[in-house]
Amino acid sequence: MTRVARILCAFYGAVSVVLGYAAVDQAVHGAAWAAPVLAACSLAPLAGWLREAEHADERAIAQADADRAVRTRALRDDVEIGWRDLEACCCLQAWESHGTAHDPITCARKDQAA
Ligand SMILES: [Zn+2]
Image (cartoon, rainbow, N blue to C red):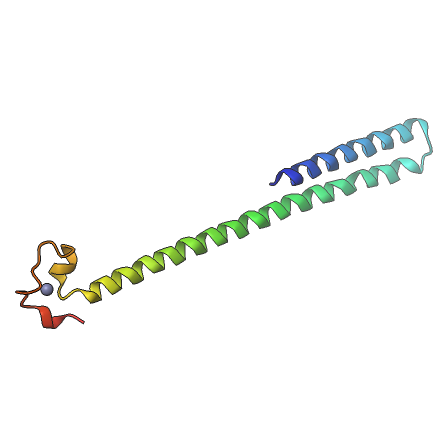
């Protein structure tokens, strides 16, 4: 949840508390019709709170999907580079040793690659 969303949630909570207090105050000292109206109004900010929480969840899911896509793309690139390196080698021994334990001039399997 972002900082702005947390501030909004705090604001929604404060408005709900104030409206709830006003509902109780009207029930005790004021007009009888105002108490249920204010009580109902005190629930409205909670809808905003829930919406902010839902929006934060959606953002977290979207961010996780984007991160997963980046990791998948990087892995796919690594695999593609690995296959390209393997296909560029003249034999498996050259690929396994990164060319260090292999002499391409005397390699008997030179024709088996590519
Ligand atoms: Zn070779």
